[in-house]
Length: 223
Image (tube, rainbow, N blue to C red):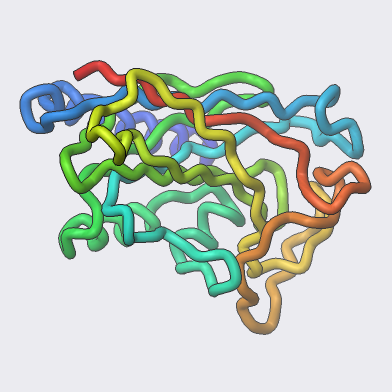
């Protein structure tokens, strides 16, 4: 019953977001279609590949080149920790609303959860001059507090032209809020929040010092 209620709430939220996309062509001078494509599978990351592997609904924002949702080596916001631990996007959407209201961000979208390997639905995102960077984040699920993110510019700063299509490969991170070391680790919050770090140990690294790529965000210009 709870799962059905959560699914209904997510569905209604996505419907409202999709309704908002209908006027993006009119509201923004530049519009891109955003899709998250995951390559994470038992073949690419065989060590302890979890049952039910998936990615949470991603959130993405267009923003100034000088702005960041997070910085490796510094603590994650509450919203980012929430999405990394549970996939819940409520708090990060609040933070992104503030991000937009202060002029650092321009447009915010949320995608859908999907099984991995696989891909999300395509959602429109608005951009304009000065707001040519995009950052997207999604939870690696199941996991203690691991997430993926991609940040990219969609405009060539040499000639000012907007790219027709860009694929930005995700980087895998530890949000620094849970000490779990495997996909199925029990919830074990750290006594104090640690900085965001690149995932350099655990099953996703396959014995290396970094994670083999797990997928990419695809940006296709439609206006």
